[in-house]
Image 1 (cartoon, rainbow, N blue to C red):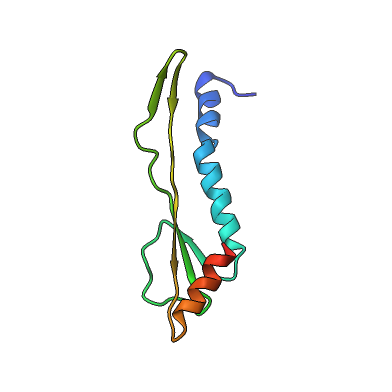
Image 2 (image 1 turned 30 degrees about the horizontal axis):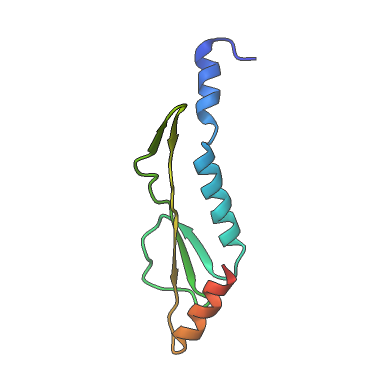
Length: 100
């Protein structure tokens, strides 16, 4: 048990938000694919032969508001950047996007 309210509060803030939990799970799922999966990083100079996926967290933006009862509705869109290179880029891109 926490000794004081500050310790109790710090435990609550250490927990990831539902948004972060979902984005972490999505990144873990992408990491299970043959392509290299990164999260929120810049495009590296070299792309692995099997391709590269970069998860962009996105922003939730402004909510739509329902007044009765008062509720805030967010739409949050994460993006996946898929990168391939080589002589047969079209086929490699099709294979990579189909794996997602």
